[in-house]
Length: 68
Image 1: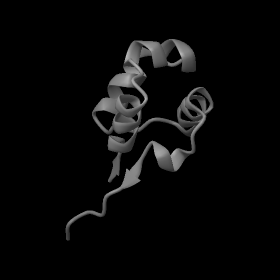
Image 2: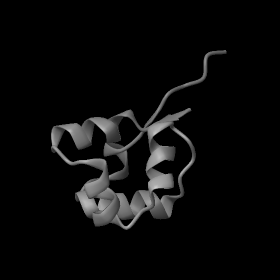
Image 3: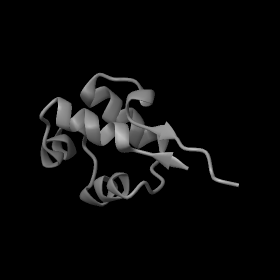
Image 4: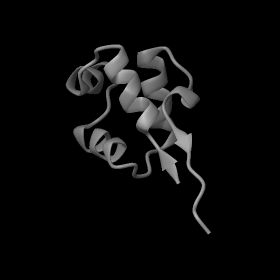
């Protein structure tokens, strides 16, 4: 499973409001909602967020292995 918990932490650490990022990265509110619930978002979205935040994809997401 992919988790966007590091993304949430990054926003908190940098004191960036979600609405501010939506405008800066040119993403939709629906996309932000997907990030909040660990749903799939495209690499294009990840690219836009990385450009806006000047970070790497690994700063936004982490892989959590499934329990077998």
